[in-house]
Image 1 (tube, rainbow, N blue to C red):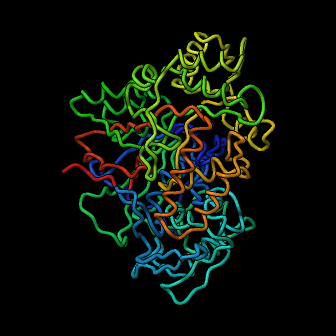
Image 2 (image 1 turned 135 degrees about the vertical axis):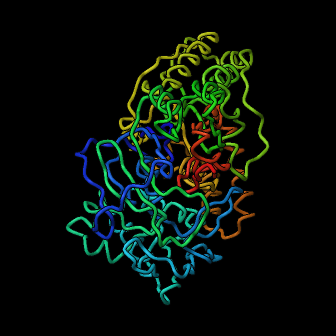
Image 3 (image 1 turned 90 degrees about the vertical axis):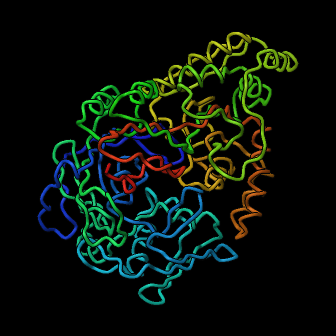
Length: 520
């Protein structure tokens, strides 16, 4: 998982190496002629693209490409409000147990087949059958009731106020095309290298580490200055991304290094978009076992960290200091104080609790330069209050394995978390519900929080849910479940002479290639 900072919200895993396979058009015909360079946007991203099956759009690499090949029923606008894409109307029932949908008329897939309610039902039924990837976001889905070609109801097995927002992450498939190529794995092998979408671009072919897509002339939404083609190029090294952008060999570099931002901002032909994201750097405590099960230890560690120093010197000020469990880009947040260091208060907490000669361990990802620096800084900070911090490198897949049982949760873990879609509930419910094994990374268990989150999940009243979410955050903050450090921007470098300044991005999607426009 390298196109985005390592984050638990998506449970994105390191991609397995695989043979490179050609990407063909969904209709099975030859790829269209290449668009001229001046009409093509070349995007640099990091990491292997193992599949373009929308089932695995929980991988950042897959999602970046599927964003142009497919469409969703709904999305979020710049104000984090749900708006329609393939759906013109969408209503969550008052009991939060169903969503009624009206489809946009006149939408066609890349092979010319019309979009119908059958395709939507097929997409959700397939997710339910396979049960992996983005299926976890809509695991409350039970069945679909089709009224006619443009109307259907998605029925849920239990109340879920989060289901409507989750629709923004589900790409709709051409049911006939996938069924015809289902094979023995429900189309997974075929969709690994073919698209079955209705998005603004069609998959062309793969050459080495490049994947190309050309404009779909039948797309329902017409806009000016949309590129005629995209090329997605794998470049893992930050310095290479920077240099290729300066040289004009790429037009957009996804998630450039924080330290490269000033140079690109000053360049005559380059610039940097710094959209606010839902990513928040934090240290997760094990609240069940070991020394961090003691709230006094957790509070002391929170007060010891040099937030200002890390913010200015490690991430170059690309974000905002935290003030609560949720990133400050999301709604429904209580008025909590901004984090700050207070070594005297930290030392007093330990002294009052009679805690001496304390040693704690923290795991971190050594592949991330910022993580190494943050870990070293905390180690130095804790030493000044008499606490010995042992640093233990860990790979992200190994960390995910440790979360399958509360007994194996690391004592402390430094990572970046983010919301899969901009609803506070998706972070709070998965992160702090006691029975959310695998996503409750701290083993946190608080009966009052459990009760409040269940109330919010079953409520169709957005205002009531917001009040509940604020109360939950106040409790979690008081319990010192995590060291909340800072909400991050997502620096994306681009060529000013090639593409227009990217619009202020949706919080959950700091880069959406579908929105890229060519410079006049």
